[in-house]
Amino acid sequence: MIKQIIDTHAHIDQLADIQGALQRAKQAGVSDIVAVSVDLNSMGKILDLAKSVQEPNPSTSLRVSPECNRRTKIHPALGIHPGMVKEGEPAEAFDFIRSHIKEAVAIGETGLDYWYKWVRDNTEERAKQKDALAKHLQLAKEFHLPIIIHSRGAWRDCLSMAQEAGVAKALFHWYSGPVDIMKGILDSGFYVSTSPSVAYSPQSQQAMLAANVERILIETDSPVSYKDDHGGFTSEPKDVWRTLQALSRLKNIDEEKLLDMVNHNAREFFGL
Ligand SMILES: [Zn+2]
Image (cartoon, rainbow, N blue to C red):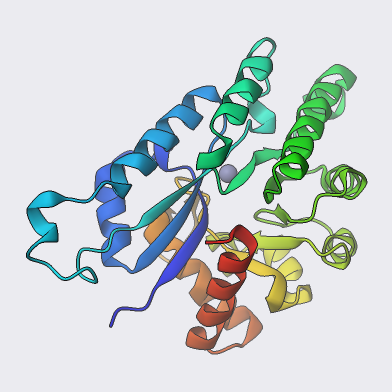
């Protein structure tokens, strides 16, 4: 039987060939994808995609065993990416999240991004991002949902806001920040995830070496492009195997054993 794996962070609405990628994911044993959104438009697309996958296919369901006919499940996460927090839209977007909250397994992706100098120099932009993150944290708390946090360059602020909000479950996705802040994340009971970059990025590797495997999830953040031995590739959910393989090498844990652990973590974190 084919082994199963979970991609805990993919922007499936942004993939160039969505149906092809989902087909390849299924063939590669990707049982579940947490499909994160970035704005109002992507939330709508992801909810539609999740529904279309759930509907049984009448032409095959009678002839093929349920195991063979098993499709990759898509679990929507609803939120506004810190880079997409625009004037005007947030109120509408938050109303949309509330009205579709039952269809979501998580809030996200949300967070703060201070990577670019213009953001670091712009108090107003940072305040806008913080305001949006605070609202997402409130939603996560109110509806008892996990939250997916993008924290690039803003690791400390993201951690203190998550701690202050008192959310039960937070995932600092694709964590590649300072190890001391990550210790604070893990001490607060939160999780970190890593991407195919863990094969070569010193920041990703440093973080993953210091994290205990009980709190690690794996993802692709597809369609992000990564380096590999052949120059590079544009990721899709099936490439979550690359994350597993690289993490297995880095942490020197048998691949199959690691797979069981990260699958367990993902199911527990998202309640899949
Ligand atoms: Zn993302």
